[in-house]
Length: 82
Image (tube, rainbow, N blue to C red; front, side):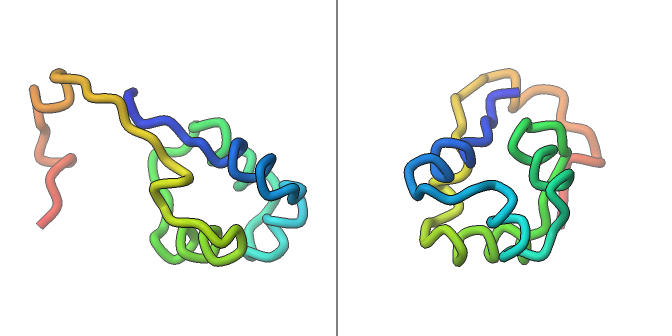
């Protein structure tokens, strides 16, 4: 998947421990670890907003995207929202 979680880079740059971030955001260390590793299929906007507030960053600082033309092919109804 061309979306990459860059949370570890922000945590390192800010000098905060993942355990402390999880506590400030109100999620378990396991949930944070799964997000950090990219093993989740989604994240609630509220959780993302809390991470951004705790780290004083923007969502784009925590996620990266590399274009892949395949992302435009084979869109299933489950992928569409609206």
